[in-house]
Length: 261
Image 1 (cartoon, rainbow, N blue to C red):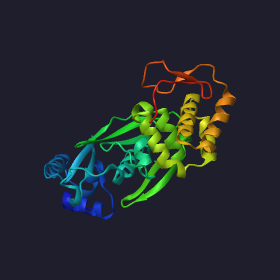
Image 2: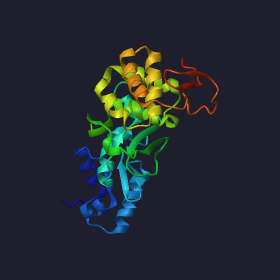
Image 3: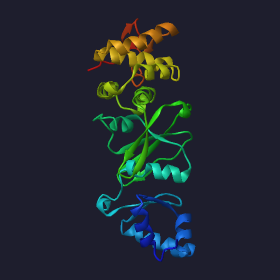
């Protein structure tokens, strides 16, 4: 179907809960020249009805979001990644938010992909992409939003990746808070299956945090795995804290170089 104006085309997309379009798709739908389309897009951008995401790819800003100047990423990230042909899942603190965690970096939306992608700026917000070499081995869940599906790391994947990417996840106390909020969503068998997919240090640190929170049933599962692997070196609890001074915890083979609240 061909449309007479870019506005009518965008309105039709919104009617189908689609907020992302490409220049190529718009050219086909309108049957206009490249120059004419470029000028139409410029007018839509100037009126805050469209936002450029990347070269040749644009975000429609529905009326309810035009005062903000952007759309919450969870409402369009699935469409965007489908347009790009890139598998993805929402990860880290952004994923934890969908399972009820209250701590979230509000201005950063975190997405896991297989290959590096540049961050996307959305006015005062950003979509940041992380790369996981074992991307296709990470359990995820497909959630439903008002605008369609959303792929999110499973609660267990979220916990492991928060510790694995701890430099991007906030302090250990922040990670500990998220763990406490997600603990009822975790299943022992899911945690077991992920231990072998991450460095041993991740299990050591997670086990220590679960123990500090008072969840012996879970911490014992981690301890069993750590003892089986028999770590030789004592590693710091916090990799952000470069100091290796602290009490040696022989149970977890960690140097407690940071206090846990």
